[in-house]
Length: 300
Image (cartoon, rainbow, N blue to C red; front, side, top):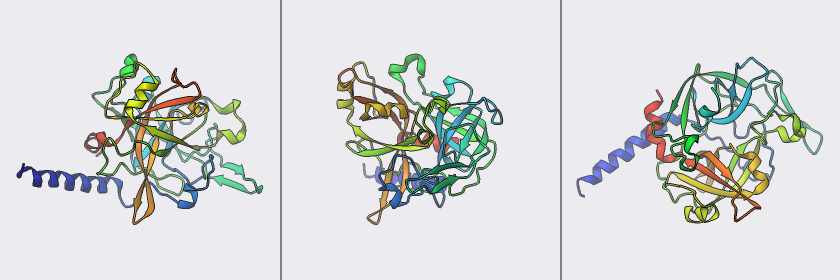
């Protein structure tokens, strides 16, 4: 036991150093005024790490968007491994504020004071390589979905801006109990698996949804035959929020008694309306923290 103390300290120090290197000087940018504005639609520069995963040529207007990815490094994004089973993802669209096909135009929205708020055109970057976790158990055994995590290496480095920036990875002191009984935010698009022709214009914009994280014991009581392990995290929300499934889950790191930055808590694995609670949607996420070592080994 005595000999293990410096070893553990060394591991902690190495991981801390590696996380600092991968996350660089700035990630998970947070403005406290946006954190507390009670709006569902985000600001154009709010959550700038969200990317829409494209299936088809990036210059083809018929491209489909079936998943979301999260930018974590200038040339890498993270996404659920299930995204690779839906079709062949070819590119990721970063900085997209509105889920329509007008990739070459600004996204604009008039607020309650009739002022126009606009985001610059998004940036489409092709995927160079996809790496799936070797322990991934996929859609063929959905009730046993495990290690649902993958990395996308992009063909070029992303140029950061106010509207395109990376999210922090989880901090080194997280454990499986860190996010139980909390209100956390997931961010994405309504009906993100469909082209938005059936939505009202204001429903096309990137939005944030608050969910309540719950224990695995309570999670399993809501839905029978649910196979979970310590790498899963459950959350609930009002049933209509199921339309936001596919959105990553984020937490806030507090430094010196102030909210400092967002960090990635979990990637979406599946959602279901439990038989015992028809007014509720149950989300199951894959926690990112247990995979930090795998992420670091696979990012050059």
